[in-house]
Length: 228
Ligand code: ADP
Ligand code: MG
Image (cartoon, rainbow, N blue to C red):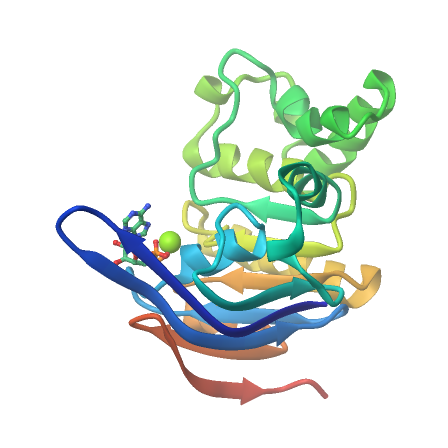
């Protein structure tokens, strides 16, 4: 579903050029969860942002269902992010002074779902991430981990076919982390989503179908292939 071929990404400033990704190739299929591990600065977030078409590659090809993301107009890119992609970003960017359920409903409303239906679906997702009791709270009334889970609910509402999760468990305790990664794995297996999970946690990574390691912008090893 998602394919990267020989992808290169560089950040330029007046002083220097950073080689964030060098010749990265990988694919994630529907029904599969791929974990991506790597130290800070290895290019994990860059890779997810390229897959979400929030950034453009400097070389190589990123494609979705066989369509080159570079060929998308800005409008097609916005539509792609809204209807196909569930991006769980490192920074949650929740709206202040707006309740958890309304934050979780944002993408649905942008996608044209009616208010009542959007709130209903957002509530279901808050329940799935264990936040049903906090639906009326605003972000400042929630802990960091709770805010993270609101952002997860927002990303997953609307059933995106491609889920891009950037260290989604960074603020969660170990049991919550296991639950969230199990939820993502379940969406791959049961709903046929393609899941790309960035995590520092080797134990969580090993629950994925495959694990890739990124170092200095390059894929290191195909650590495990454990699909039965
Ligand atoms: P990771 O998510 O694995 O920590 P990133 O993709 O965020 O890695 O970053 C990869 C490299 O690119 C790092 O050296 C980082 O400093 C650099 N980088 C990331 N974003 C930018 C940016 N907007 N401008 C300049 N350099 C950046
Ligand atoms: Mg990152």
